[in-house]
Length: 228
Figure 1 (cartoon, helix red, strand yellow):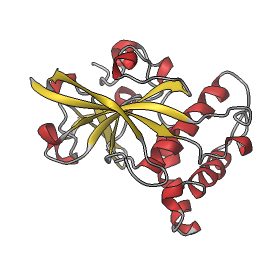
Figure 2 (cartoon, rainbow, N blue to C red):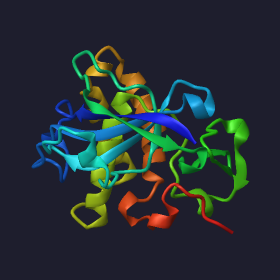
Figure 3 (tube, rainbow, N blue to C red):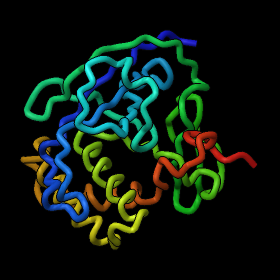
């Protein structure tokens, strides 16, 4: 067990053009809440394990208010969130907790048609354990999220939920078009070319669409590889 400091923040969403997005045009979402755990002690890299909560626009001023909050999607590896600049996150505070490697979620990756999972916070491809797609399809991947990709993922998850309940239908190409619009509007990518953004969209959107809606994953399987 390690004593770990968990940081809680509020992520701004004002840059997302919700008014232009199908089934989300009536949503005026200004911020969402998250927490991050440093993974340096577990995998030797200065990245974090990020949790994004399914709570938007609320007035929450203490990390204690988020302890029983539902996640919008599974925990992902991320860079440190910016606390300065135009799209800075607002820090709510820290909580310390004892965390063991076994408390961390399993993640997945694939090499061609071969699928692997990684556990105990050892999120490096060389530590991959062979598995099958059906046993890991509900797990998050090992790609590292930046602040812009976090905002993109939030939009994708909201759309997936609306598609699931029949509010609209979206083709893979329509998801890509929406993804481009979201990233093109992101303050952190103002200097990026359209080509760079399209490359990012084609890389990230298929990964995001391949994971089931989080609320539909049985609780005992969230962040855990399916047993034999």
